[in-house]
Structures are given as C-alpha cells and as structure tokens.
Image 1 (spheres, rainbow, N blue to C red):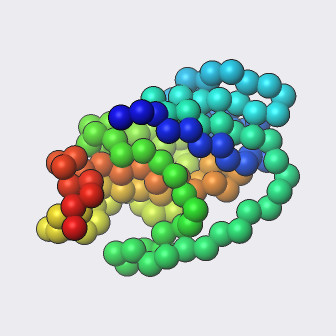
Image 2 (spheres, rainbow, N blue to C red):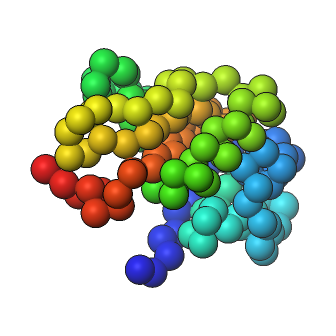
Length: 136
C-alpha cells in the first residue's frame, strides 16, 4: 500500500508541532514558516498555517456523534492501545472515548476521537482482524 498525503489547516504551527510531534510521536519532515510535514505512521500529513474557519458537522455512528470531516490511521491493536494511553496521559480530551464499536459484527473495531489544538478531528482505530476493514 502506498502512503497517502493529507494537507489540513492549523491556527498555530508551534501548537501543531507540539501536538503531532510530541504527543502523537510523528517525526517532523520538511517545514517552513507556513507549514510542517509530519510522518503519521508512514503517511505524509502537512499542517498548513491558515486563519480560515472550517465547517463542521457530525453523523450518528453506533450511538456517537462522529465529527465530519476527520482523519486518522488504522493501527494494530497494540499500537492503538499505546496511543490511547499516551494521548490520555498528555491530557488530551477525547471527543469520543476509546471503546469498541459494532461489537459482534464484522466491522467490530476499537476507536477513539480527539481534536488537535486547531480543532481538526482525528480518529484512530484498530481491528482484531484487519481482514474486517471493509467487511459488510
């Protein structure tokens, strides 16, 4: 699988650097006074300085209001557990607490949602069996 690239707005590059670099553990790549590249589990995400407001909405999923838009990575279960502990220890507030949704169904998954300092919503999830990633 090839890495994806995602560019997203942030209001403060120093806060983005602390959040993505220090809390999430993303190595920093190239940067300027307007943007920072991060390695998010092998994927290139780029925080671009922008004062523009963003539209937000949500959709109901398994009893929770899931923020839209959002992005993240499907991790292994041990990596998901380690990240949830690291994020909690850093005092990041969860929008949706770490939990397992769709229990007993083909799409059963561990998931968590939280926001970066600029309000961008992130979801990290894990499956007991990655073959269920697209299961119906």
